Length: 334
Image (cartoon, rainbow, N blue to C red; front, side):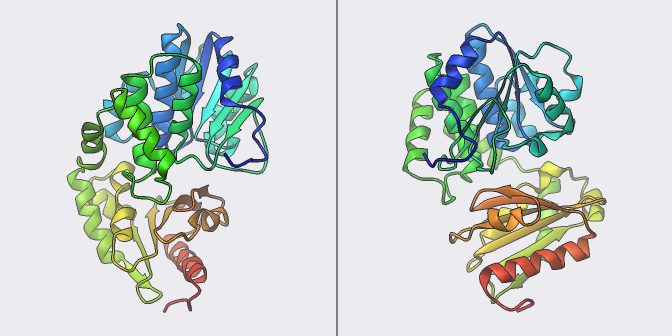
C-alpha cells in the first residue's frame, strides 16, 4: 500500500476497535455510487454477525439508483437527518473528508466519541481518530472485504455480494486501469464466497430505464469532439431531464458512452442542476482526471473523477473544454 498522510493505523487495529463498540454508524459520501453503498452494506453485514447495533446512513436525503435495492441491507439505509439513535463509533467509508459526507453527517461525526475512516482516496490530512487509506486499492469495498476478514466473520453471502458490487462498479466492470491483479484476486475471493457476478452485473449494467436511453440521445446530440477526436465533452439540460422524466441515476451511464468512442482519451459529461453543474471525467489512457477534478474542488481516481461547478451551463462547458484541451496539450477549440 502507498503511504498516505492521513493513514495512522491498520485494518487489524480498526477491527480491534470495532469489536469493542456495540453501536456503530456507517456513513458514505453524498451522491453515493456503487462502491460507497457496497462498502457500507458489506461492513454492516459483517458487524451484524457480531451482534452489533449497526446503522447505515445516507449523507444526503436523495433518491438512490434503483439497482441498490437488490443489495442485502439496502432497506436499512436512512438519511443522517432521520437518525436519532446512539452512535458509539462513526465510520466513514469511501469518503476522505467532511466535505464529502455533508453537513449533517459531519455534525454527527463531531459528536461521536470515536471516529474511523476506511477509504482509497488520498487527501492531505487525517480527520478521524483512526484512518486507513490505500489509494492503490481499486475500491474501498476491497478494503472493507479485508477488514471483514480481520473481524473473523463469515464473509460468504451478504458480505461478498456487497463488496463485489463496490469492486465491480468502481472498476467499470473491470475495464478501468485500476482493475489490477489485486482487484481480480479479490473478486475471485468474493465470487468464491457466494457473490453472483452475473446477476449483479445484470442488475447494475443491464437495467437501464427508457429515460436513460432518451438522455443518451441528447448526450450524443450535444457532444463536441475536441483535440482531433481525443476528447468528448457533452451535457444534458434541466429541460432534457424533465422531458425524459429522468432522475440523476439515469445519467450514470452517459459518461461511458462518450468514453467508448474510438480515439477518445478523455470524456467529460455535464448535468445542469440549475444552481450548479455536476460534472464527471473519465480517461482511458492514463491521463489523471482526478487532478483535473481537484482544480474544481472535486476529486476521485486517475481514470474516473467528479466535480461541481457553481456557474451557468454555458460557462461550465467552456471551463471544462479549456481544462480538457490543456490536459491533452492541444489548442482550445481544436
